[in-house]
Amino acid sequence: MSLFALASCDMDAPSISTLDESSVFATYSLAESEVMSIHVSFGETNSYRGRFLPYYGINTDIEWGNTPEYADRLTDKQSLWNYNTLPANSQMNTTNNAYAKFYEGIERANLAINGIRKYGNIENNANMRHLLGEALTLRAVIYNDLIKAWGDVPARFEPNNADNMYLPRTNRDVIYKQLLADLLEAEGYCYWANENSITKTTERVSKDFVKGLRARLALYAGGYGLRGDGYRRSKDADLAPEKMYQIAKQECEEVIAHGSTRLGSFKENFTKLCEDNVTAGGESLWEIPFSDGRGRVLYTWGVRHRAKDQYTQQAQGGVNGPVPTLYYEYDHEDIRRDITCVPYEWSQQLVNGKSHVTLTAINRWMFGKLRYEWMKRMVTSTNDDGINWQYMRLADVYLMAAEAENELGNTSAAWNYMKPVLDRALPSAKVAVLQAEYTASQQAFREGIYEQRALEFAGEALRKQDLVRWGIIDQKMAEAKTKLTELANRTGYYAGLPDKVYINNAEDKDAIEVYGLFWGEDDPDKISKITAAGWESKNWFVSNSANALTEGNIDGLYVNTPSTNCLWPIWQCFIDASNNQLNNDGNYGQLSD
Image 1 (cartoon, rainbow, N blue to C red):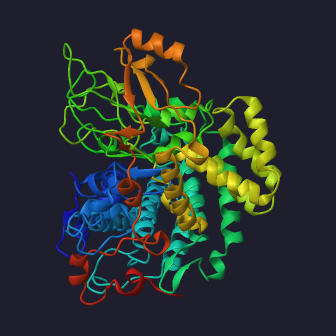
Image 2: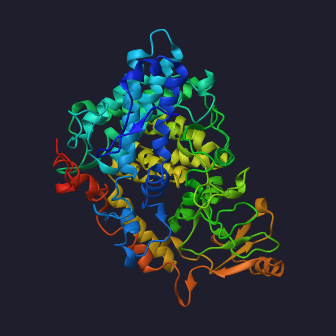
Image 3: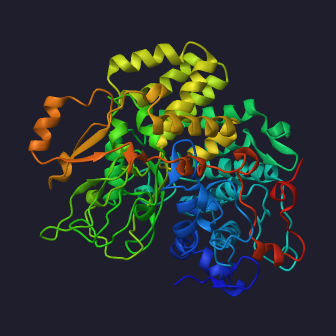
């Protein structure tokens, strides 16, 4: 049992008895338990599990909550997505939500960091050093997500005491610099993946992940963000873009060169995730660990099952999905397309206890990277599925390395890091075509990064912060609405798409076939054959004589300027309990310096 006990304050933070501190943090097994207790704050009901992972990261130009409606733009759930969030939002304005639980996790990390530094004998105990590095890294994970969602937040790098109970917002630049230093320190402590028994699982921090996270934080710190005087980059010379790109380049290239993790097939990464395969050394660098009866990852991001069926005893999935235009951004031979974008769900109707695949609608696609049918165990919980949240995978490290090299003026070297990601997705001839296109100039490669990060990471909640840090979120969101309008009317790029879609709804889950989604898939002879074989058909673009993808769906994607509304406010209950230290004035209380 953890020695932490919850204290009553503005973030329900735990504390540890000073009488026990020396014995706890001088003993590896006890110190390890305290570091692992940080994970408790990830899995609590309204923390990452039920609030942050479902809601932060949508809506973007490739992802949305299924399915937005402009008429519902003021509802509490949709206003968390559509850049219209208010401090009294009922989904979040409680003292046990993600904001509180993030600080609870930070307090646990602070106690562990201080305790191990004092009593862990890290100079002579390599495993204790790893624990210290792990605690520093987990604290950085939480701060990363606090800044993404809330911008300037109170900085707590010491355990709670009477002198620091109430703190104002801290300029995020101060926090970023602390985290970059912490992670550099942690690199010196942590083992590489599979270097030690501790790092044989993706549920434990490895040096590979520490370096990857430091690269990600550097890109965020050197990028655009919403601040008190507008949407801009930092003015701090220590966080200048070229310095941050240099950090990202070095960290990513060292991970790749070391080779303790590897790229497998695109599909393999996600089937392993669904199979609870947490063996380190593959593509997954670190996952937020959920027990079998905890976590709502499939529930939110998986293919929908409308009934308790042969694959799951949980009728859930499909809460979030791809923006319908995403499917058409992929080359038709890109193997990522049909894994990422799924136009079907599993039926509510059961035949002999089994459901079958059935077409959804043009405005309600599913993400297919996570599927109950890929699992090796049956989900029996009503709300939780126990699938881990993959926080970082090696493909991200490759593409961060490519981006950093290009921004530093080394476009030819940048291609060497993009190529392995594309080689597993496309035929070699098409990779060569992209090489010629992307390496034509620095700007062309930059556009290639924008494109490939969308195609690679759709449904993984990375896109929103990418668009924010690149300074292009307004442009891309406006383009998304234009594309959606053209898709709904089948004009412009989408002219000539077929009227109907057909699906083979046989029981074989590995042989699902869809026809009619792409240009040219309207051959009368083939349609005659597949309908005779019992394929299901559906009018895809028109429903009840009107566009199935409605103006309400399109206008509901966002309702305010994304760049100046990309942060959540600190919730009102924390403002009220802050002893007048916190506010949401101006740009949600952000600082200008």
